[in-house]
Length: 256
Image (cartoon, rainbow, N blue to C red; front, top):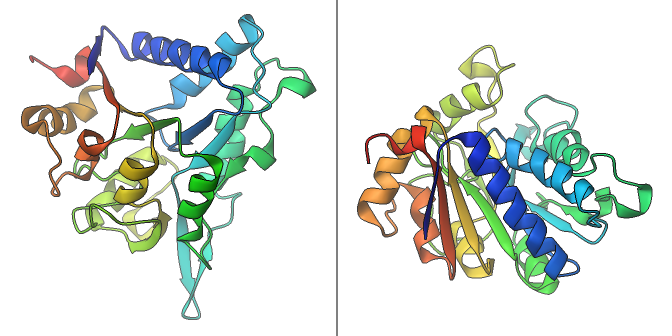
């Protein structure tokens, strides 16, 4: 269940290699993807490796995990995808761009195959995922200081479906680091729409939690020491998933 690597680069290459092999095996594979830093190198290597061995990504589907939302005139609305912190924008600027490294038009990941939860009916997202057959590989990343996963924090119900949530102060502080163009905590939105913890463990066929770098050492300690779901550290939801793997590098592992 625990796969250890010498460096973040080694981790990312190995995870990308595994993912590309799985894409080769199943036409129309569905990947659950976070935005942010933890998986960025993996996305890069998926693009490079799939190009090198000529793997078609046109039938790959991506289910994104979350997005910031704004409360305006007592109504929630998605943040502008052009903003630097938009998860929707990230899916196009980063994931789609990296996946499509040197791909011919016929073999590219398309925008129409990238899915997001909708504000007007969050629970419909779970129904969509079910209709697609569930998520084959759900990539997970833990918040460094509070263990949030997507935007689920310690108040989240273990069986929750996709929903709108008030972001904890600690989650917002973590996002100051994730999205480096934020100048202060005031700029970080206070609300988000997110897959639920139930979405993750009920609708994923396999979950892979990535812990990389010194910043994730606390997360690694919390998750590896208990080896079971702990509501106070939501990323430990990985233990409730049907099949699970934890990819960790030497820096996150520390002296363990």
